Image 1: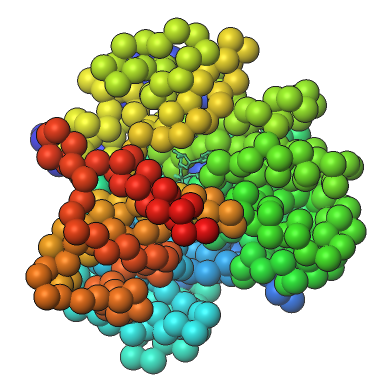
Image 2: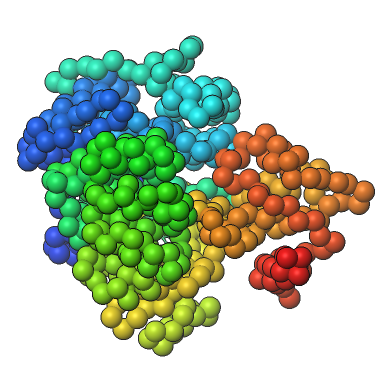
Length: 541
Ligand code: OOB
């Protein structure tokens, strides 16, 4: 019998056996996390969302019942479903129920819009799309109708809240008829890549690989049932989901408290009300939070403060360590494709300030190469490549891109420029990939450029990340207009919004130019462009 191409690349059999023999892959699906949670931690608090509370026992039961409800609606193991929910308990309930059923979710972010969602639905041939009715002034049902019109495979749009003519959130059903847990070496769900290409790529994660990263992250972060984690970043993102994130907390017996967003006033209130001990922030949020009046009083109960997702200035790290002396500070340098690095609890201050930690696993293979793929001397700067027990071997259904993003022997080209110190710690010094990191949110320059070029006034376009004191980087659209055409930033943003591009990808600044500088091979010379813009800004100041 021939098997249809699953669209994703498993690890070679010999390596898979090794990861199993080494105890990294336990052969348990992620859905066991809740079964184990109920057995080990029963009545301890597991999840709080607004006024609603779940113990481990209750959460496990709610997941099983929701899974029953989904089955009753005709959802089946192997189906692919795009889920886009804000930080509400239903996100976790649904995610865990889908894992339990072997239904494969794509974890979209609330900020995504038509362009991204249609692309996800089409790539996986999703049979369902799950949204909230309204959130932050945006009506996801309107988006859902547009998505439905563009995606013939979608049979159902499930709505949390007022469903109108769409399908309401399923009732809970007896779990008696649930199928067996899914196979641990199979596809569990899709994370999203920050991307470097015109369309966002999907990251296939298996139960075995993800569960390993969750357990080890929880262990090396010293998590215990006493830990109370406030999730302020989008819950679907790899960092607050698994590094160690909500899943790590549930492995360790702690409690996850959901915040709908990262605004300091609401977050501080939740920190106090729920005696939060653990936070995972991006550097721009850390800076914003520390700048609030009485920040150290609000954060005095925090025992573990993680910062990652974007470059962190050592001065800001030092500031945090000084102002929160009772707290363990940790840098996290990770990627949805797999590899996650942490500084370790108890590391010397120099390591906490000046490195982005070291990998989770002794079998995370790290290679630093120059631009000709030759190894650099120890401690020298180069391109980070990695391979290991929880780093993917290829994006979903993307053979051409995979040939560029992975070496023939399976190393992932992260696009990050780093130094590997003799002690195994990494320092991120920059990136070679054409991506903008705006406060931890990743924007593929090529995707934005493809959208810019669709505007009738635009002859040539380049998207750049300009250094920014608050966000790390801001997006600048550098455009050459067609003769006689004119375009201003508000109109450009409106145009891109109408194309269905997520708000965080819209340019913060528009720079009109006579021409774009080119490299000898005719590509836009982004480094030169950046230098020109920075020089112009400095001379204006
Ligand atoms: C996390 O994951 P992604 O997939 O949103 O972004 C990954 C990229 C990295 O390749 C790197 O360019 C950048 O984000 N990055 C950092 C960083 N952490 C991530 N750059 C400098 N310093 C850091 N500490 O961002 C992510 C996933 C899991 C855990 C933490 C972050």
